[in-house]
Length: 92
View (tube, rainbow, N blue to C red):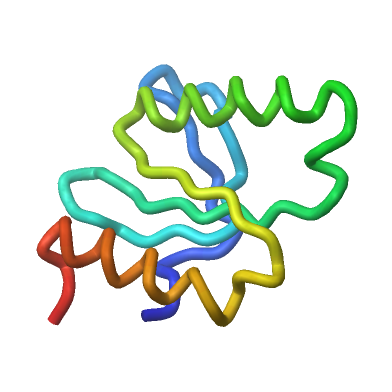
């Protein structure tokens, strides 16, 4: 279940830049599953506020967003992707 896209640029309905998303899976109906791979720089002062605002904007667009660390790459990610694709009826 490889991602449908890496580093996808997402815009809102008015064409404004919202985010560049690390890994993206299409869920159908214009919905996306987004997994962000967060390193330590996401915990620095001010960055959490920026990430939270960005997440609110992505969720408002109807997207599902997860934040994981690189240690989850082989472990949790496949389960999350299977679960969300299954909920969306996208598993074969």
